[in-house]
Image (cartoon, rainbow, N blue to C red):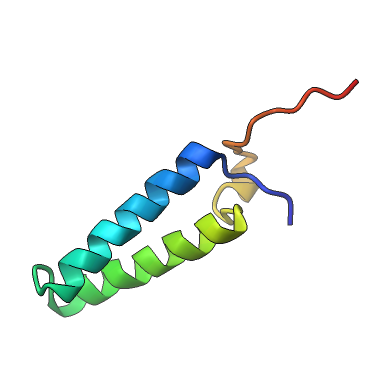
Length: 70
């Protein structure tokens, strides 16, 4: 897999995942919404760790820094 996520994108996703995790485990968000958001947070963590977002690929998007080839 080719990386398509930059550092800022990865950090933002990890912060959002951490916030959702804290809100879920402190029972601020519960029920179906809480489970769905927790699953989404898990996906955010996974995509941040591998630096690849499958939703970016079909659209040709990338937030990675462009490296100059000489």
